[in-house]
Length: 219
Image (cartoon, rainbow, N blue to C red; front, side):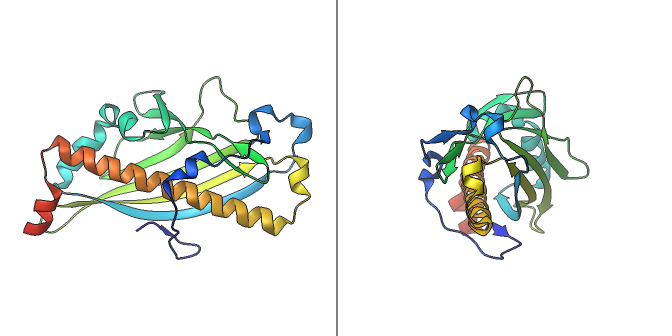
């Protein structure tokens, strides 16, 4: 279950959130002189886990081969490699108050240190985010069950987004802007994490010929 520590609750959503659009003002087209000088800050701390039915050593070997499966499992996000351990991701298009943005971020997965992986933002070459900035800091840890038959990939994420809204949005109540931005950030994280978890679990178990339903019945 994905949890957001600040509010200690889960949020329900649908799969069509990636198509949320305003169609009025696009961040790409917004001139700097029409943006606010002080960005709005949105932050969330999240945690969850992914169950993979194999020993931790097997799971680690799979994660270390992320170049073979990450681009495929990340669909429908647009992903292209930046380096051996780095990727540029286009998350989707989101909007509120007649303003929309299509976030593109660079992420790098550090080699594991005693079963702990770290993912942080890195610059995307020849790209300057239009009107926003993202600080992504995640930690993943492999925890093998006593049986040795299942490994829990536990992760925590600290995500901060800075947005330079157009001046017409800044005239709205600050509480409305903050609450709407926080809610949208929660929806994005929830949707992306759930979909990516399902795809990685399916890809991992298929690569090993594991029938999860049979394994659960035996357990």
